[in-house]
Image 1: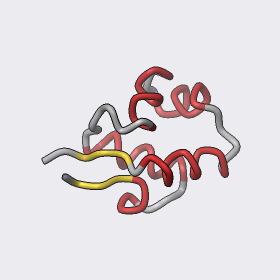
Image 2 (image 1 turned 180 degrees about the horizontal axis):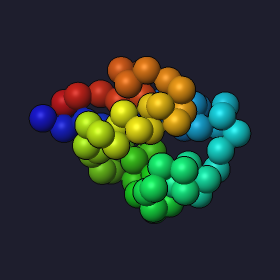
Image 3 (image 1 turned 135 degrees about the horizontal axis):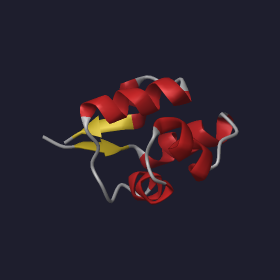
Image 4 (image 1 turned 30 degrees about the vertical axis):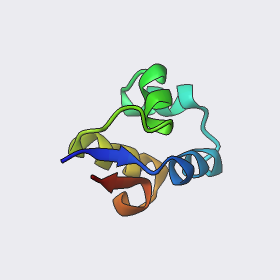
Length: 68
């Protein structure tokens, strides 16, 4: 089981919150390059990280992420 980013929804949520990739990375404790990989659906994400990001972006998990 992999948790992948719904790229369009993720980027849209970040932009609506007025955050750059760098700002989201700083607030989430992740690297900017990892945020970039998530936005392009190159990397999968763990459940705790997915929850943290959905909380920061104030979006439901199932909007931002897809379980494959």
